Length: 161
Image 1 (cartoon, rainbow, N blue to C red):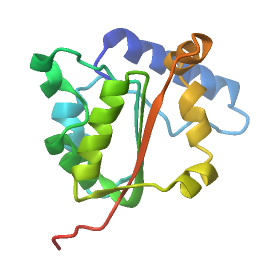
Image 2 (cartoon, rainbow, N blue to C red; image 1 turned 30 degrees about the vertical axis):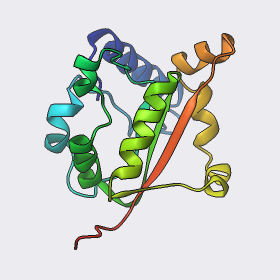
Image 3 (cartoon, one colour; image 1 turned 180 degrees about the horizontal axis):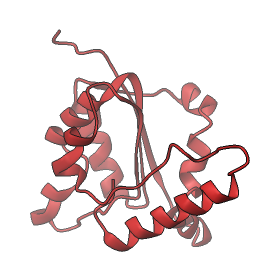
């Protein structure tokens, strides 16, 4: 799900190119990009417990305090993410903005449906290295020798059930 037209179109074109490139093996048939506002439409696209992994890679930091309500990680949205994620599912965030990294860590740490993944589990997760350089934004940060701030959390059982 992506809200920006140009990014959505670019990702759709990449999906088609990957399908063509891997047609012989049938790879990349289960990927897609939809132009939609995750903050408004997530429950209309996914059922309860459907997702195993959720990624927020270099989200818009919305620096101005008046725009913090637009940040993709916040209490009410975390409840929706927990709803569509299966128990044990993993939520990944990475940013090159320290303040935003701290913001996301704070909200995820405070939410009862998520727990931080320990360092030893991160070391064994094949996804983690890709988070740093698997996107154009990540590659740009690496080229410029910038810092990144990673947060990885596991969806836990409902403590209130």
